[in-house]
Amino acid sequence: MKDLAKGQRSKARANLPIRGHLLDPAQPDVQATDQRGRAPIADGRHSYTLPGVAQSGKQSESAKQLADAEAAARERFEKAMAELREGAYRFSSRARGQSELIIEELVDPEGDTVASLAEVEGDQGAVALAQSLELITFDTWLFGQIGDKDQLDLKQEEHWEVWFSFGAWIGETMRRRHGGHWLLMGEDPHTWRVGFSKLFLEIAPFVFAEQLLRMGSGATRKMVTEIERVRLQHEEQREKDNDRSLDRFVAQHYIRLHTVPLGQWMAMDFPLLAKVWNEQPVAKLIEAVKEHGPRLGPNNDQVIAQIVQALSGAKQDVPVMQQTQDRGLFEAIAQLVSLRRATAPLAIDILERLVMPSLHVGLPQTFPPLDEDDLANLHKGIELFAFFVEVNPHKFQADDEGFLATIPHDQLSTPYADRNTLEIGKGDWVVVNPAHFAPMFADFDAQKLLDKYDDFVKYVASVPDAPRRRDDGRMLADTAIRALADLKECVEAAVEMKGALVFRLLPPPG
Image 1 (cartoon, helix red, strand yellow):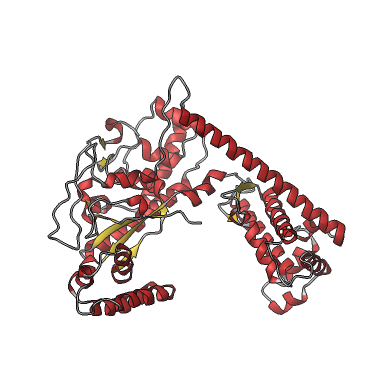
Image 2 (cartoon, helix red, strand yellow; image 1 turned 180 degrees about the horizontal axis):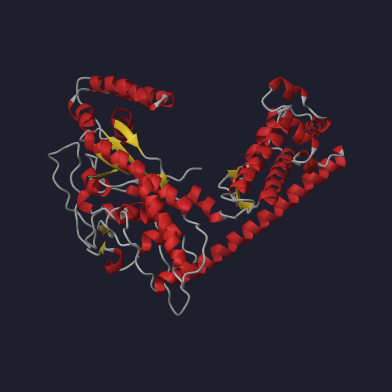
């Protein structure tokens, strides 16, 4: 980050306590800090960062272990890629040799099969009649590979080989056609993905292959249709790029989807929650759960039923707070009873590194001159929206040592009655004073901030010593600014109902 003169960031290392939980106003302030004098909340924040490796003249043991692990991972990846290529080749060769089909022609957009399916798209009766001889032949051959078994059994070596080679062929065919990366997240091929380079889309070839092998008649038509759908999405992107397709996404973009925790903001009616959790008998709490729970949609019906069942075993004339401090139950009831608005989950490092700092930047009236460090970062390929956040002075002071690298610890509270130290990395909620954001959002306008970013890109292009760069940060800018707009709505909702603004960390999806 820039120094104080350029970034207007606070360098204070304050030892600030977490205030008492909001559901019990009599709870005393928490004064515990760790050995370095930081509030306990700070430990949670660092749970999703990676430790650095100390540099020394002699390679450390940990550095050797890291190098060995990287070499082993590279060897596993190369071995898996060889198996994928060989599996795809075996599948195609076996189909050609046994059925006289060149299966690549089935998915050729210029071929008869794709054309015939496109002609009858949307008409289910016509689709049923559009079974070309090639489709029927491939269906017959594909399911003949399962032999006399009624269905696919991946515990059988022959079935596993058919499934693996089929999935490898699907994945390799689409990767070679459009450009992309295999993402091998574990030992089980079900978890393997292909992430495309020109649009942000990933597929699970082995999951798809299993679905096709289990569906029976019509599997080939389904395969051709889905492969063609992905091709059309790439065609739409090519048109948007004016026939100059760009490789925007690398494997790291997709790995983040499965490895980086997500952060989410929630506006919650804590006064109501405190009333039904702390004061009213359990019978009233059950009524509140039944009344407010359905607002979250039918997908939560089973959860509501389980909570009601759990509460039914408690003393009905006594508040639940006096009977349990189960935090899982507390969080579930809080969401059913008091949740009023929530932001879309977003990668935590994007929130901390870009979203929150961009809020503190505000709307720059002018852009600062670029020094040697700035120009060096541009030459190294820093994304332009990250550069925008980096070089522009902050209108609102941020606390570098605070929560999400911006929020002072004295603006935080714990929602739990049973503990004062929060473990954010393990899913603990943290309450943030919504008034802290009021001045920052007073003049916030998402479109104006996006326009300022566009002006900044033009400004960078006008600097003689700056490298000529295409705008690779627009999608990131859209994402970050949309997240700020969502947060603004949550803040306003929390302030309006005199409730709470709650942050939680979610595990990465998939």
